[in-house]
Image (cartoon, rainbow, N blue to C red; front, side, top):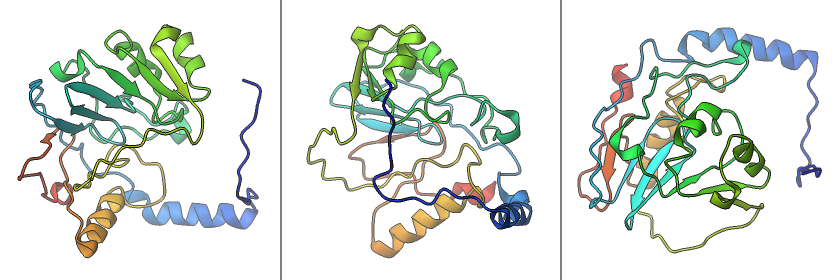
Length: 231
């Protein structure tokens, strides 16, 4: 692929010396709160009940959705760090994550949102590629999977604005893209604090499972504790 993506909205990419000073100042102000002081707990229950429709959050964006008899694994990044470069590394908050759970042995589809290191992870794909029947990925990502040994016949590649539309009548909010790595200059729990506050303000039903905890869909009892406050 020889084409280059271009922002459709003008984006100022300049970076001046004053920006560096501001960035360093912010970093040292917030440094002690960028990650939890101890590892986040992982719920180890791994019973694979095929009859239940459920979703399991594994930290950051990695999630397993079981619905209508299918198992969909979303952004399966189970690596220990968010970057291949030690200088910019953020170690996973929950420590090492095992892929030997019963519910991760046979997967109908793996869906990759984009190819950033904290979403597309070589070691994770190598462990999962033979367990998955198919991969759905954005334009340009198939080349990585093929290089890593995934058969081209198992890959569907989609361009920007491609979409599958259905009326899912969503009634429950499950926050993701938090709880695993330090990727910005804010307190590690800031994303979940902000989204729960806004959900409560708007009257949106929200669930806050711990890492690895499964949620049974269409249940009347969802995890809703503020467990991160105890870390």
